[in-house]
Length: 75
Length: 375
Image (cartoon, rainbow over all chains, first blue to last red; front, side, top):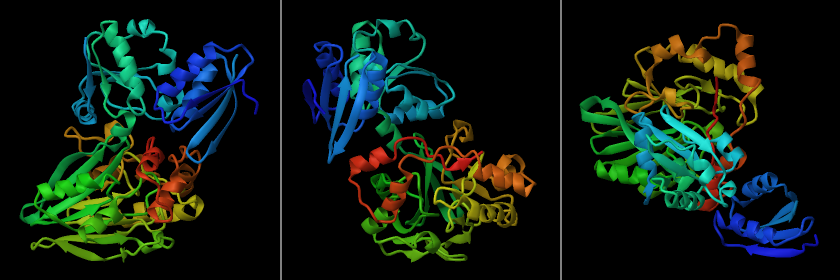
């Protein structure tokens, strides 16, 4: 998937993946896609819930080994 | 204002003693709805930490001033952040050290009674997950039943009591939590017993736990007598310890009964479950004290934090033991069952020795309530 920006949040524990995602998102335009790499197990459920409450869209996610990748489109 | 860490053991004392506590749970809404710290005198609000990143002013007005406030999250990190933000606003709060993971792993040992000749029976109450494990101690020897994976707690406890663990039992192949039985047996050289009908696929050695097996602990021969009682699983076996305690595993609980579907065969096993509960248990003495492997709701705890009741009382009060109509019973235990425990298939594989996830993964697998019962 073509992302406009990539955020590497690997090795960061909660709440940092969301804190950083939120910061990146603020600097992006509506409709742009942010790719997020994370290793925290709780990241997925929290990103889904956060995206929903903020009006963003989780387009896709996948897991390769220990690394989760998420694509979120800014709302 | 300072931010204090509150340990899971301190929260456990508040729960058991019914002390007031206000919990600000900052996990996401689904996690909170699925599983939380429960207790008779606990009030809650759930506001995810990611909704508080711009400031906590909104939530401050919802916090009480007349009881302790505890901020809770999954692993601790977010609760520390929110607690510090609240502290800056002048609110005196604590966070749960280690988060819900620590809560899930905390065990509270409670003495449930005496055995002949000065022996003692201890129950290890896992408040966060509702698991109950046991240690019977007599004259320097101990038997452990349905141990959880926090094996150090059992090993240390036996050492404190000056006892050597000789026998380790699992009443059945657990589906809701990872057994510590095999590891404890390996660490102590104790014999590890499993019901053979539950152990057909296990990849390690064990001693068959069969009907009428009797083992003794201590010189005064505290009997542990096995009683085959299938239904939750096909192998589920109960024990009568010292002619006084009935260890029911996941067949009979204080306020509910075992569900027959976690190994995939609800319809086949419902008849076994009924026979175990309505025929085999019925033949036992009403005076036996039932010690189950789980509790589901805080109301099942006695005042001292233990979970135990006489079999006769359960035959009077437990709804699951009082369904005269066989079809009604069948429907209750096979239809409208609660969701299955988190990761229960992988937990079963781990308990069979088929997979060996690392500790962090094991923690994740066990997140959530146990859900072994039907009410």
